[in-house]
Length: 337
Image (cartoon, rainbow, N blue to C red; front, side, top):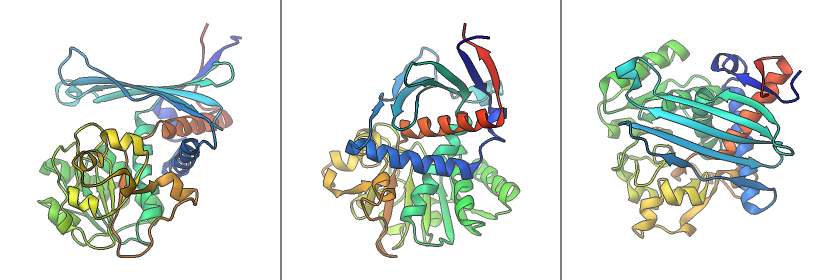
């Protein structure tokens, strides 16, 4: 028997093993631990997200890695985005994998497909943000952008709040809106109203979830009702923006990571343009989870969660999934040597 076995977990292994309830728990743990690492209460090391250009048109390769106490494993994630695959080759647009190694000796632990986990944890991040920042017992949701992130985010909110009957959805493409409507009906028996413009989507709703790659504001300040919570996930790189800068400047701003969001989040351009400063950011979500800062203080304030994605979420989600696989005997053991 090899001294260095490694557990391989395919998507078909992982999907029945961990559901949205599990991922919500893992992501909340990740926010908490990340905040403690920022304060120096525990040890953590994270690489920046590194993107490699390729010679193949409409493609990219991304890499990130990190470790964080008390999780006893380091996690490296490599993702390949080939955005023409679905149309031209009937293949997925993204292939992504994570590698876990023991922190103490670098001993290999697991190699797993992680596009499914990545989508789940992104949606769960929106759910956790709504749990701490939205009004109690929200009755309505709006989606700006209706791709895979929106589907996972809807799943997270259904897991947290049960069936929500007032759901609206907008995207630039009618076919995508209709696909989201069908998904919600078939998966959760929820009737989603597809609307023709973003203004109609965000008016008079409790929670707005944005996940577009826009570089121009889509959601305007005047459209947003008092008490609305906004999950802004689309601005995850330099120059992206989904929210009107005046909306940001007049809301309670919460971030996953202040440093990351200043580089490529929703607050990047408002800070560069002098509309807000670092001190206008209320806190990180982890600080609220840990009780170091207050979340929503009344039913009238508008709250914004600026989320760029954390290595910490990959570390916790992958390791907890690995633990569960070991406990249940799931996966295929391979020999490294």
